[in-house]
Image (cartoon, rainbow, N blue to C red):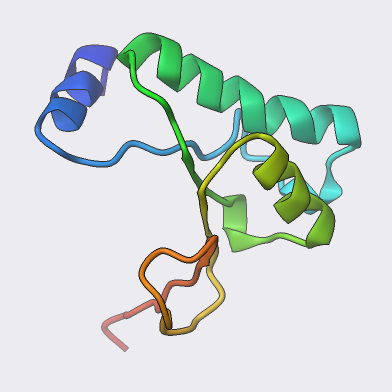
Length: 103
């Protein structure tokens, strides 16, 4: 998928969020690496699409207090994890997911 297609998705009303610059697990990153993972991907998407990027989906769904604090500092409003839970309020800061498989 190229930028034109991603822009079309955004224009059609789909939410576009960041997923980090690489596939690094964020709790394993140094402070400098973590900052780049969070801000680099957000800034690239924002620049290419001309919209603010405020949603982050964590690689492997993994986080810790330091990662969540860095996400807040990078001005993400919602962070998607793979912690299975039902949300009590729409779009809390951390948003859990419930995985459904054919098994």
